[in-house]
Length: 378
Image 1 (cartoon, rainbow, N blue to C red):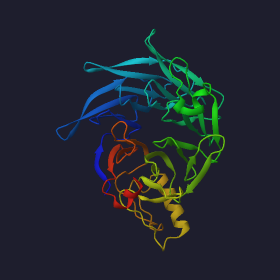
Image 2 (tube, rainbow, N blue to C red):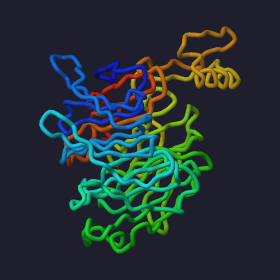
Image 3 (spheres, helix red, strand yellow):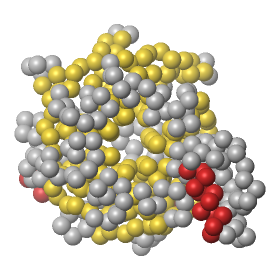
Image 4 (cartoon, helix red, strand yellow):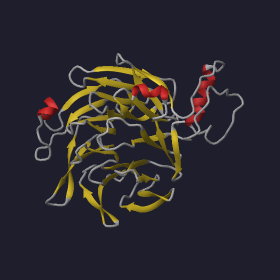
């Protein structure tokens, strides 16, 4: 089985992030606090509690090089935490939001981070040494609804976003005095801050979980209509394809290589998507326990079971003799998986280990090394 360890930290986990050496994990137990755990003698021990927010913490990211933690919350605030001696000290971030902050991610060079919000804006934050705070420049009037996901291109300039208006967009985030113009980044370094490079209208439902491939050549994001979208040659003439699946929608994705993506969401088990030699993407299988379709299951029973599952019927052990199970389910996560994070060394383009967190309060670590049928895609 691909899952190598399962850890129960809380009743519910909103988001999580790992320290650079993966010895500590920061998570939000569906509250206004961030708990930091360290592995000690084969047991997770809570060593810090970050208390500054007033409402649920909706996003955490832990920088790999500078060892800083950034948090965002529904209270419309963000803080950057620096470790000084044995304590974590918060630094104020000026977001200028009038709605909840929903997601956050450090840029590859860690001199900026992006915050998506319910105010239909994206905040690009950078540090001002003179005032000892983080200030933001806003990308306004581009989204028609809440920004649910942000993802940095490896060149540190382009930023992809997803929104509940169903669109995926790519912007330039070049900030004079913070970024340097580099010929290797191509024409993207010539674009002004906030300039929209492309808008992808592939989904007619909410869009979530956008990610770039390690090379930055492919963009992937998911729709709430049980579809995942792959876009090559992001620019004026992008090449797009979509993969539809019969299971519950995804919430987030992760590129483990240029040819393989892991998707997680409401179906409680990670899903593997891969591209063949010609670049055509398709669904491969579930991780954990294999899911097999029952030949005797009817469409009506499948629909009823999915509906009951969505409302927690199967999670609480409530049976219904009239519903014939259409397939077996993985027994690792018992509720929606809302986050996925790589466990890899800095600079490594392939991800063989990653972690998932869910509304069941578990963090599960997965390893792909022994999955022989997937090794061809790594």
